[in-house]
Image (cartoon, rainbow, N blue to C red; front, side, top):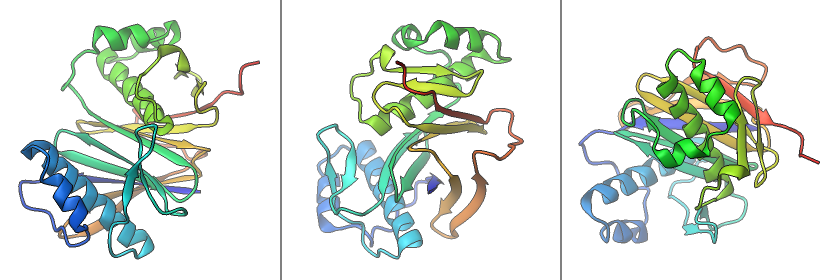
Length: 240
């Protein structure tokens, strides 16, 4: 199954909101300026991608699930995940399965907090220590971890629900036993796309209001990727 991941480097210009409902705009007005701006841009990007891929002219109604994940209220519509980092906005969606997206900005957090560091396993710490840029590598693992947690709808991150084995390209989640992650670093942006079940293709897009969606690259599990930072992790068999 194909998953879609779109990024938008947002500017100060006002977004085109014609695909948003009055309810969405009313809710945005209850937020303070910065959260409202992110909220509107996120909904615009999601609406434009839904129109581009499926011809849906107005953003469908969104509800918040008991897990805290946003979802379209109508059955049969794609699952989606939104993420923000600095001025970069991302959306991931798939018509089959569940998705989780996270974005981080390099050097915005030069080192992980003590809480995040305590969640790292001995395997993860060993892998990070062997990398050319340990802080960068630690942030990429954190991005991967967040994308899997967003997929599962976890609000409280518990260290032992997810273990990453970056050297072997494997992971194990006790919440979502069948998940695959693809992650890369592009300029200052670290991104991670998680999907349950496996990703057959990850189609990446850049969006701008003037040009619309422009395809940038497509990843598949068997593909050899030139990027030195590209990582693909797939689930280990369930522990017995």
